[in-house]
Length: 93
Picture 1 (cartoon, rainbow, N blue to C red):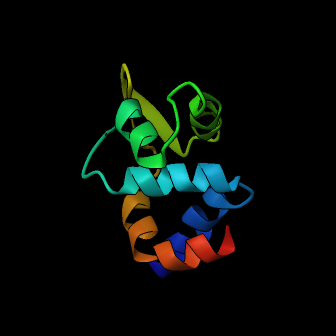
Picture 2: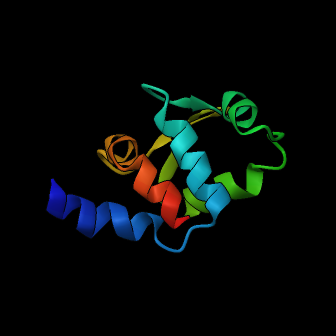
């Protein structure tokens, strides 16, 4: 799993804005798909202000829309990686 983190997860978050990383960390709290409305509330922002971050993460294939207003991780084990490494990731971003 360590190699998978280095080869897949690290490149996926590399170069992301701190807002995008916070968005992913907020998503990681959910056991499944995340509601855009809930994510905005967690981050203290409007859903509209986060739409460009959401779009960027979808374009980079880090997350994917699963139904209207909901997204989930597109990369296997991304949620676990973010939760296990949250403190170190926050320090970097």
